[in-house]
Length: 327
Ligand code: UDP
Image (cartoon, rainbow, N blue to C red; front, side):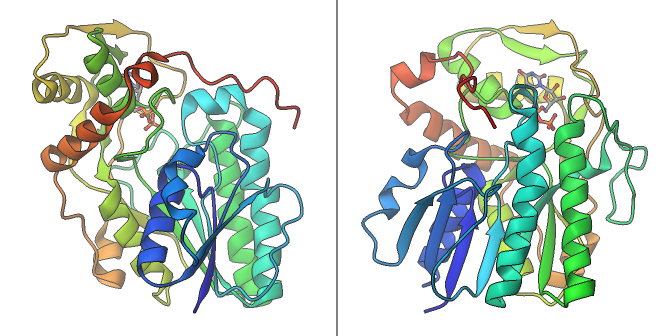
């Protein structure tokens, strides 16, 4: 049985990856420090023989006994509100954490895939974004801690590839949504759905003319799975090119939930990218991948998930308190 380590296993993407690799017959070792992750996302896996969980912070030395064939590094805060609350951990998990996992991959002779992001393009001046665009990032802005950690992560991963001959893969993930997103993480999909279900007005930041392109989680996981087993070491964009303004998206959600909320406008956060859309030509060519789930279908599934949460969870709208963390 092949063995795979998945970091950020209790998070949104990590938990879906655990499901996929368990289903494909791998022995899955999930790792998470549970700062932003939630064990509820993987509790259904604990009874399985081919799943184990390590409660560990990957910014500290990572030890995994036995052989490892693959490592998928998905541990990181991933929402602008989280970066503001835990900026140092965000920097550390992308830099020190990645370094530890590359060292582990080298030690175990494992192939490693790291989760990068469309944020490496910053507020992009090229549209749609191709992999050869270098980006437009404010190093000291509120998103800089995430963006620069992810840019460093790509650099050190390529250095291990070229210098040590390590088998590496880099996925640049664009906005992704689906079940198990944290309701109160501040990102637009859980924010709008949560507001609709609680009967609150939807908060659009800025005038809502900024765009995003939303990919359903199952499509993303398929792309990552194919990339891992490809022989391509340079970064590959995975995302859904179907672009929409945030204002139109808010209206779509109001229609979908069948509620009659209003849209209210709040100030645009600093360095909020004005447009974002992946060019997925490379993914089509190299791994024969493109998304197959459209927004209507994906949002319906996502809404079902949020509706299944308890009233208490739905109304627990305060953002998670990270103050106790000293790292
Ligand atoms: N956004 C919004 N209202 C909210 C949350 C987010 O209008 O309650 C906007 C945000 O300003 C951004 C877009 O939605 O332009 C996507 O935000 P998200 O935090 O989901 O991801 P990112 O900015 O990293 O793409």
